[in-house]
Image (cartoon, rainbow, N blue to C red; front, side, top):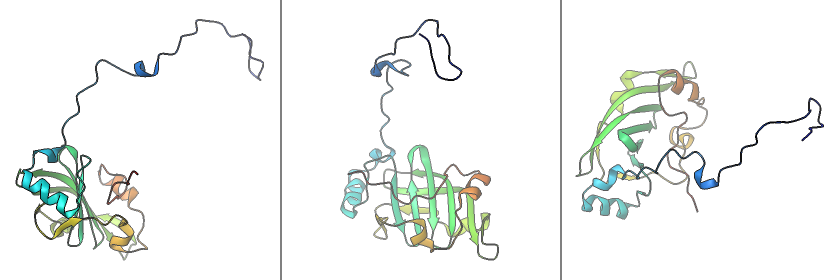
Length: 180
């Protein structure tokens, strides 16, 4: 074969055949899917979540508790966005009774004076330390709710502060995108 484009020339060597789509990037048998953490909840708690319209179709449960929007994710990951311009991230444990206890490892808040997000461990005390998924005040996050609708417009994007302060999250997402 001869390539006639600029920089081209004769091509030689062994051409590998492409592997069928099902064999690409496979390194052994597929791993069995891990059950979602919330599958271990009592049936009554699962029924209560369903009644309230809280989605459990993924490994994450997103709930609203007063001014806080809490994400309970896989492998004990938790994050929170608060209406007072506070973002937290850490771990949670949840019993079969639906009571979750949080440890907030990272916390930033919006400083109006400097118009920036700053590390603020003291603000973590304003974040929920526990919640019960069966409590009446624990409700689903609104489907169209965003960080801006929660804490108001005009705040800088927290992306750089999240990265600088060791957060795993790269942006604030209150609810997963709906797939139709």
